[in-house]
Image: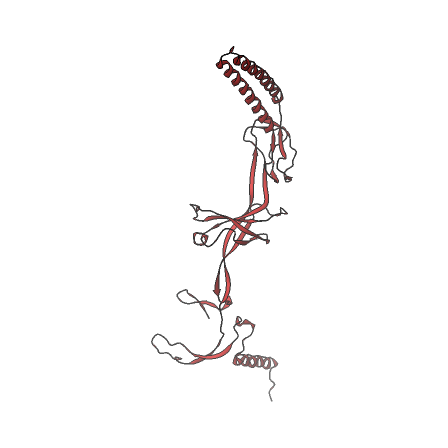
Length: 313
């Protein structure tokens, strides 16, 4: 009796097992979750009603699916942005003599960021105060003489004008002295500070930049089709490119579209008590807008016909 090769026996056993599995009609985990009853259905006939297998029945597996209530989201691409960002500019000319705050530190409202030299301002203020005292005395004397008929009304008016002019000059000098201290307008972080000791700042030169970091914004642009679905105070989430997800509320929707992109600016306000968020980080905003009925299907069950229409296997 000839000897049978062992490899032939193993191959034959595998073939028999595969045939038995196919014949059993039992699908494994790869059935896309559609376990159900086995039914028989005729094969669809061709357009001419003829065909070699026309009318033949084949076994298929079917399952009853019911629609479920789901929330439809509007997805907007955007980025993080500070709520307020202000450049602190010099309002008078002067030399920088003090920088009490280093860049990157927290500042409170009224904190001095840059201090300019006073130069001759104190002397000019003393002169202006002396003129105010002189003109006040002159006005009192003119008023007393005018009440007795020894001074014309025009002379009294001239004395009053000189007094008011000296007071205005003193107020202007006091304002210039106040402007030598460039202060933070709100609580925040000193993000940049280009000025250095010894720099001479002209009017409108930047001393530093203060950024308000709490709350923070996630800004995106909504399409024309979706802007009508979103309302103010809608709760939403933003997933940052860093992997972090933050929660917030819609605080602003632009009423005018960008003429170039035909999109509308949207701002999602999020809390940032730890000042961990940074300006300019890419984010994906998700806003729930409505509830719909939908069927849950595995993507493996979807297919396209010859016309490009999506269908289910």
